[in-house]
Length: 350
Ligand SMILES: Cc1ncc(C[n+]2csc(CCOP(=O)(O)OP(=O)(O)O)c2C)c(N)n1
Ligand SMILES: [Mg+2]
Image 1: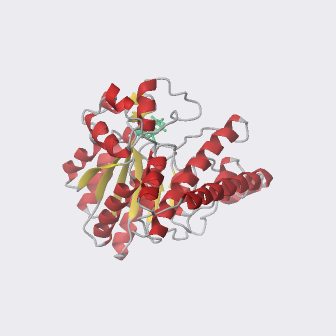
Image 2: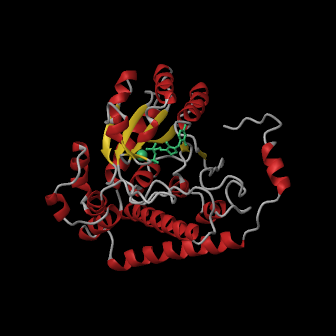
Image 3: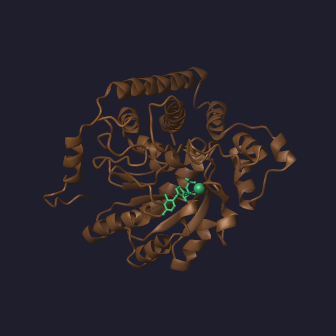
């Protein structure tokens, strides 16, 4: 992987963090309404996975999808405008935070219903398979979505018909306030795929290079027609479930440890599914974005000046996005009606 590629991964992680932290501020100040589910802590997953995707691949996501959309190439302006409920938003200001959509970039939506992404993904994959195209669908879902009936129904159909889907579980260990071992008899999500003979593995979701590498390999096979695969990304969210959730059910020590632990240690630690011990707490590292930028500096893949410029440019991009969203007009009622009837001619959507 070359220098430019590393910089692109780092830039998108920095942009993601800046976007989400700014959205939190705008929400607190009352410029964003409704629910707002943020992604800080999980950046390495979206960035590693989506940098491995081709333009022709489709992406289906959840309600925690701003960063997936951003990395997929939707502009910060169009996403921020959507969060603000403005006409220049990617869904015309009528979807809001959980319903980002961009057909041109094959970003086939954020979905608010837990477990809703799988059937949408396999529907698209079925269309690809019928046409025998070298394309894939990336289907994101959370650890809290694996006990929905749609999970096994969709995995079964995908395996049976060898559909080109990459199922990506963002296992941040929590379904709102419920930790995975309290709601799942088998808390290693990847092991569930064997019921359908789907190749699956777990990946350190705090390490962007590990995520990227695993995704590249899986997508290469999937596009060649070998059938679906599943990757379980072990990750962690630094904030509460949504802006309405202070996240007080998590011990402070756990949160601090995840913020600080070196990403390589995290993989080991998560596999054990235990709270961090004192030794881990004492091993003060950095969060994964800082750890990755440190690694790049040590390997002479980025200089301090270049890093400063990256930080500066993402701040400017987000500042610009907020100013743009704030000045975008609100949608009017007629537009809602037009959107409801947008496919009245039975147009083929994919
Ligand atoms: C069918 C359904 N049931 C319940 C909810 C309420 N709900 C919203 S998010 C969520 C937790 C999902 O957790 P997870 O899949 O782990 O995703 P994360 O929020 O951790 O990214 C629940 C239960 C919902 N949106 N849809
Ligand atoms: Mg979760």
